Length: 219
Image (cartoon, rainbow, N blue to C red; front, side, top):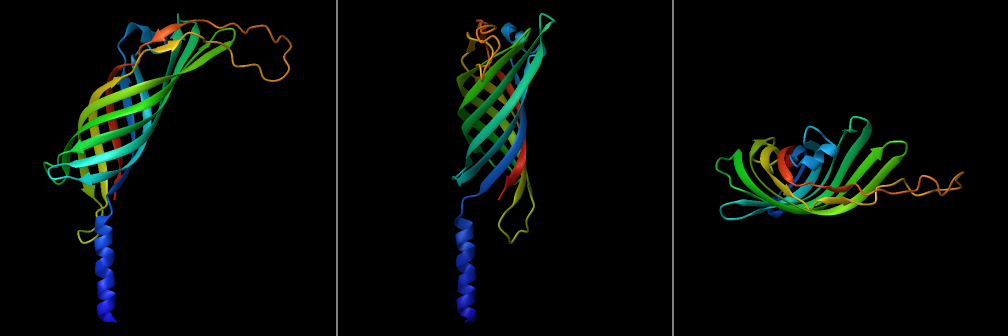
């Protein structure tokens, strides 16, 4: 019986070791857009986003390859011509690969390449609220460094707190807002034909530099 119990423990340990490490992170990024057209929605040229990600890790000979899926959401607002409130919301999903090189057990430089899809919503408020949402393909590349702190005991399966910092670039086609207008009519209206016009605001460049900070767990 003792021999059988020991064999079961060994089998469970081996099976646990074979499970690919998983990770989950939450982070903040600041995307910097220097094109003059971006002043329509932000005079400081930046957009702050929050990011949630989860993925797994493949152990290769000289590096670790993280594959992850992420959701991000952010926005910014200002007043165009000092009188018309404007805002931009940016929601997106992303799939990314991150190659990490463990130069020290707790220090891993990394290179990230990702591709995703974003939904950009522009809103202007004058006498009425005008808005439009457009979809964009997005690509991103970045370099950074990851710091790991082990939380579990040496004889247990590794559980690590991870924090990483990075900088890179995000590439998107310009968002075209050529039909900015009021929301669709819902229900009976006193004047169903009034205030239904739409305007062409033009395009908004959304490619630029991105700075990121993420924290989470790997287990």
